[in-house]
Amino acid sequence: MSDLEDPSHAETAQAAARFGLCENCLGRCFARVDYGYGNDERGRILAQRWDLETIPPADCHVCEGLLGRIEPMTTIVEDALEAIEFDTFLVGTRIEASTLTRQQAVYEAIGAEETEPLGTEINREIGKRLEQRHGWNVDLDAPDVAAILDTTFDHVDLDIAPLFLYGRYRKHARDIPQTRWPCRRCQGTGCTDCQGSGRTYLLSVEELIAAPAIPHAEAEDATFHGAGREDVDALMLGTGRPFVLELTNPRRRRFDPTQLEEKINATAKPAVDIEGLRFVDKEAVPLVKNHRGSKTYEATVQLATPTPTETLKKACRILEGAEVAQRTPSRVSHRRADKVRHRNVIRCRLREERPDERHARILIQGDAGLYVKELISGDNERTEPSLAGLIGEPATCTALDVVRVEEPETLDEHAPRTE
Image (cartoon, rainbow, N blue to C red):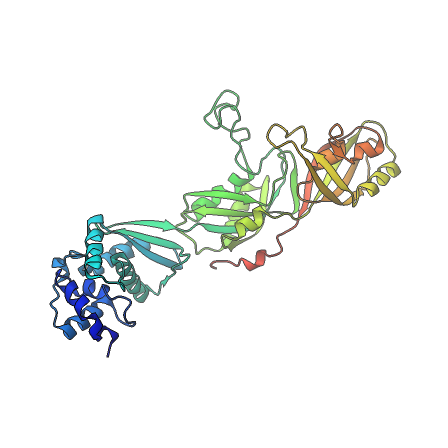
């Protein structure tokens, strides 16, 4: 015998039936009483056991025909979902406030405590039918797409989850920022300073990567998340800098990322190229953005006076392993808080090949956030110790190349969402 047939439910069921309910709405008053039944089945059991009258959904006091339209509503959602690619989905509904008010009034009048919202039943019934027809998988927590059905106007809004792609980029040209850089004067609206472009720089790493990716995934937009950033005038070489590209509202998500990688490289080279493009989950974004791994640079140094190699080597030996105190550099003090930061120099080696005694190339590995240009120049004693301070002569970093950025150690845990 079903728990629904327990005499303790008789009075509540009779009170509910007097409102004029369909089988589904009657059964939903007892949705958590027993398991393994649909609400329509619960309604039939209650009606038979207590000799109650139920009416067709079209005449139901609560749903006013909604629960008689599950099949056509399923078709509406189905048509909307078939236009996009996804692996998991979820159905939601918008129901007229007056319907929900009637539902709540019935629940309160009969004192029912094991109820279920009307929308939950509609969502579940549509979802079940779509799973059975297509093999699509409902995901209650993080679906690829949520189809929100307006039951009044039979309109579906799709809330498509972003798509995340991890890779590493190399930048082979100077004066290209990592992300879009609006003109400081007009803030992107266009002025004489930027010749109407609205930009300080016409290209960025972000745009070179995103421009092919957006149409490839049929997305609306893209957001670039980098593991730190190099200076605009610095190259990014070696194995490249980790990044995650977040694609907004992608209608395609079942593509081979290596094909997209090839497409990006075909259009972004020679300025930028990428490698290792693969799908990741959204947790990779903070992992990459907050990554504090060490970075290795090769700095081209110009010296004020001829400086012997041994003098430079001695200064490099002192800097290697040193903790450096750096007051916010004067070149960025207008946009960053004025404070002293402490960073470690892990490695500092002089390249043996020198064109003359007024030039040198130095390999420097340091903590994330180490200002390498100021480590060379001293920045008027705002950085201590510095190469210039140790050799007792002015020194300037005339070119800076990033040659290695550590990859987040736990990145592999954020596996591809699809193949």
